[in-house]
Image (tube, rainbow over the protein chains, first blue to last red):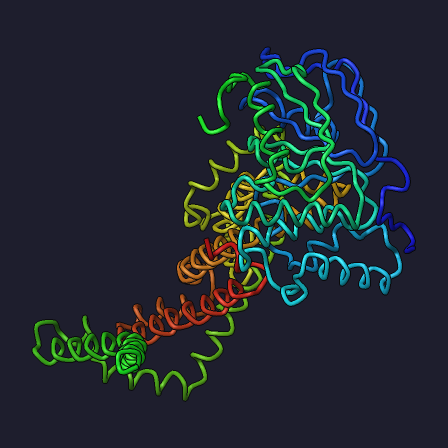
Length: 254
Length: 265
């Protein structure tokens, strides 16, 4: 193994939030939220717009300090954003290399970079700039950057929502395969119920502002999951019911 | 296939036309100028003919005077503009990132930004007498304040997401400045440099008219005193051409691979 390299989550990856509260100008977004996430768990957060999902990610990444309560994380945290998270003045290789600073020996860093480019199947694009890539390619590069080096926890803030449906389906599958090769703890925010059902080990349904956990659902289906798999559609139905968007008697396509 | 060939031919014709069109405009303009001078509407001392200007070019070049004036003006612009950029860019970056000094200094910066550099001419001559210094001082004053404000404004437009990414990768303050803020504003900074260089080139003429004994501006002033407007036009043409050439050089910065993203939205 390289120095500073943690291809898998050998140390850390756990997240613990205790009674976390946060407000913006008197508007309470999170109130007494407690959550315990185990290493390597793939958590998906779903909930109404503006309920505080992104605030929660900002707090976990320590970009925001919670006004009340405490946060414990174990390991390096990286975020994959909805879009435009790459530095446009850096090439694909340079962007990914940002995540490889912990590897001190240049030869090892280069080897790791090549491996990551190969995993995302973008070896021939290493010297391209982000504005020369498609939206899906950019998200793959961002994912590779987040997976590079010594990261333990991935925060994914609607990472595929700005992409077309076909690309979204493809990237979901690629994400599962990537995490099979490099295990990480993932906190994934989405509005897409299908995405949640396909990716989550554990699904948290959040309430309207101030966010509280309405439902904590464990999904024990092997991955990658096909969107048409009856077990996945059943999970989707279940989520919709728990979100109050569907009654138990209705079919999934209402 | 034929259609494709036709399209290629049309596109080649278009690029050829694009190339020659400025020359057509210039030649037409010179011909019109020549016709007007031939018509005798204006006396020759108030509107020199293109041939008289050409003759003046020959004389100025042969005497070596034009060459030394070009060097003198270029030197003043380069020194004044370099000092101004070296100070205005870091100050603009600092103001863009720090609210308190921005609030404190912005009214003063804006006050001086709106003050014509020509208003400083009496002070420039009193403080620095005649020579390079007053001209350099005026170029500095003309470009420092707008460049600082342009840099500061560019910092405001940096998307927050870049700072979030930098936070994830544990960038320290110096890395934040050199690896995030500076590259993020570079495309806008290049545009600001081009605009301010244009201002510097305009100011040098006025500055040299009153504060120097050589230079392109002084050349025009001297030509006017000697009622040699053909020589003045000759200097004007040189000023315009040099301005364009240096702007083209600065424009080439926009083609650098790590700033092109800023111009290709």
